[in-house]
Structure formats: C-alpha cells, structure tokens
Image (tube, rainbow, N blue to C red; front, side):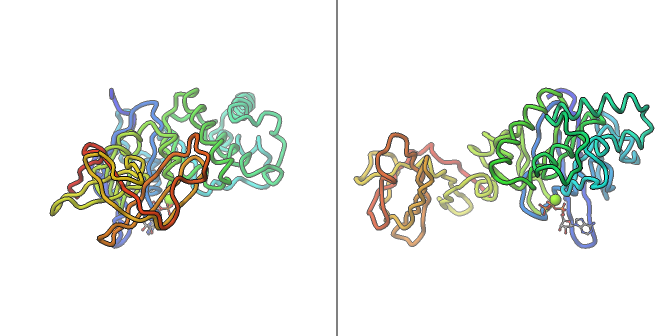
Length: 331
Ligand SMILES: Nc1ncnc2c1ncn2[C@@H]1O[C@H](COP(=O)(O)OP(=O)(O)OP(=O)(O)O)[C@@H](O)[C@H]1O
Ligand SMILES: [Mg+2]
C-alpha cells in the first residue's frame, strides 16, 4: 500500500485496570477513508486520542507520515480531530467558529477570511457565515464542525461519530457528502462509528474492535464475506453460526439460504417452521425454527413479488444452501 500515513505498532493504553487499547497494530494508507467500528467502550475514541496526541501510549509507537510521534504534542501533529461531542461556541457566529483555530495560531486576517470562506463553501454553508449555531439545523451544525476541522488543512482528519447527532435520513445523505468531500480533498479520514451499515457504506477499509483489540481489518466486502471469527460474523451484518465440528463453525449469511415449500436440490437442506416474518419492503427476513430447537435467519428479496412475503408464520419450509455458501471459522 506504499508508505502508510499512519502506522501504529503494538500500542497499549491503560486507564487503571481497564486496557482501553490493547496491543494494537494498524496501518492506514494515504487517501483512505478508514473506519473504526465497534461497540460502546471498545476503545475507539481512545485510539483516536492516541493518534491526535491527547493520550500517551503506555507501550508501542505511532508514526504519522513516517515520523515518530512520541513526545510530539497535538498541535504539532499534521492532524485535526472532530470530537464525539463537537460543541460549537454558541456566542460566535458560523464564520467565527470556523476561524477560531486559525486565529489562535496567529494566521493573518486576510488569509483567515479566505480559508474560512473556502471551508464553508466545501461543506455547502456559503452565505451562512453570520448565523449563530442556534439558528442552524442539526445537519448544518454538523457541517460547521466539519468546516472547523478542515480549515486547518490537516493531512489526517479524525472524526469521532461525526454523524451521531443527525436523524436517520440526514445521516444517510450526509454519509455520501462526507465521502465526496474526502475524495475531493484527498485528505485521509479516520472515522469512528458504532453504526455498522454506515461504516460499511463509507469506508475503503475498516477495523472491527472488541475490548481494546482490533479483531479484523479489511475492506467492507472482505469482512462481510470472509469474517475471521464468530464475533466479526455477528457484528458485521447477520450471520447464522452453525457448529460443524468441535472448535469449528460455519457462518452462513441469511441471503445465501434459499427458502422453498418443497425439499430443494441443494447440497444442504433442512426442514423448519417459520416463527417470525420481518417484512422490510425490499426483502423479508424470516426466523425459522429447526427440529433441534435452534433457529436460523433467512432473507428473501421481494423484487417483483405481488405478495407481502412469500411465507407466513407457521408455514413448514425447507432451507437449502450450497457447500460454498458459508465461511468456515475456527474461533
Ligand atoms: N479518561 C479515562 N479514564 C478512565 N477510563 C477511561 C478514560 N477514557 C476511557 N476510559 C475507558 O476506556 C474504555 C474505552 O473507552 P473509549 O471512550 O475509547 O470507548 P469508545 O469505543 O469510544 O466507546 P463509545 O462508542 O461509547 O464512545 C472504556 O472502558 C472507558 O470507560
Ligand atoms: Mg467514543
């Protein structure tokens, strides 16, 4: 991947008894939109704060652009961070909020004016420079915070849950605005999120974290199709986990299983009863009870289908899949 912009080598950070970040190795390539994905408390923010220099590692090294960051304070790193709670200054207008960091750095007034105007244009807030944060929508406030982070022209932008404050619809629209902006600027973005579809749809690559560790890194497609562990299989999308031997499991995605009324000709087939029908418009997500008491999730797309869902609760059905439909797991 060439010289990575970020190289994290064996980094550990403890808070008392808690190992917030545990022996993390990670490389991020220049120009990537990299996502850190994991549940609450798994260490995502701590890892960003270590990168930005707000925390010091107990062990390990962080290199940015080939330079060892040990002992380099936050303001001397080629990084900017958009915090999880990106509080804007309520008493400053939009332009004042965006200009704040540049003023503190002592940048000359005319240059500040140019750069603030540029940053506001980038996030499509031109003309709103004199509004107060209280006069903006949630999405617009989010974009002010983004402009404030971009105006310093960092090589690396760290965004901690940048879309968390938005409602679902706006969140989905803003995802692609962020991706476009990132591509246009060519700045490397590291985005933290606990929203798995968001990470999947935005990131060029992502890392799944659990209890301070990175459990797997890859493209969204690699993580979905080839999860390494039961944890990753269950965290990224929905997975049926079947134990096939001691210490050996098969992760089978719901859409890789066919549902039919009659026994299918596939390599694997098992009978069951529909216990849940989740109609989602584009697809139906079924839960099927098997004879051994376990259940499996099966998805069927509803393209060109006249009925709501092909099967209803209580129907006896067959599940069929081919031998190569699943992913073999060893942990
Ligand atoms: N300053 C601190 N002092 C003590 N413990 C801390 C501190 N900061 C974080 N922790 C602990 O470290 C762990 C990781 O926290 P972190 O904030 O990195 O999680 P996160 O993945 O960002 O979670 P969330 O999705 O909820 O924001 C947690 O157990 C947290 O309680
Ligand atoms: Mg956090």
